[in-house]
Length: 164
Image (cartoon, rainbow, N blue to C red; front, side, top):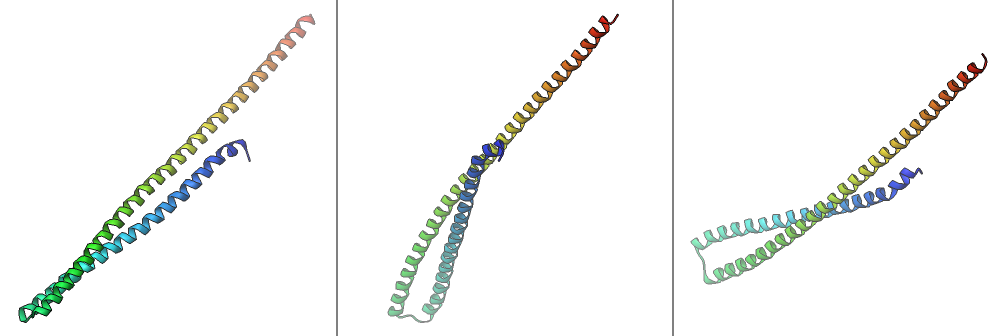
C-alpha cells in the first residue's frame, strides 16, 4: 500500500461507517413512513366506517327506534370515538417518530457529504504535493544537466586555450 493510500485509509473507513449509518437511518425512515401511512389509513377507515354507521342508523332511527336501540347506538359510537381518539394518537406518535427518523437521516447524510468532501480535499492536497515534488525533481535534474553542460563547455574552452 502506498503512503497516499495508507494516509487515506482511515478516512475511507470513516466514510464507509458513515454510509452504513446513513443507510440504516434511511431504512428506519422508510419503516417509520410505512407505519405512519398505515396508521393514517386505519384512522381514515375508522372515520369512514363511523360516518357510514351513523348514516345507516340515522335511517334506522327515522323508521323506528326504541330506547334500547338508541342506548346501544350511543354506547357503540362512544367506543368507536374512543378508538378513533386512540388511533389519532397513534398517527401523531408515528408522525413524530418519522420526523425524528428524517432528522437523523439528514444528519447522517450531512456526515457522509462532509467526509466525502474531506476525502476530496485530501486527495487534492496529495496530488498538489506530488506535483510539487515532481516539479522540484525536474527542476533539480534540469539544473544538474545545465551545470554539466556548462562544465563541458568551460572544460572544452580551457582545453582549446592551452593548445595554442
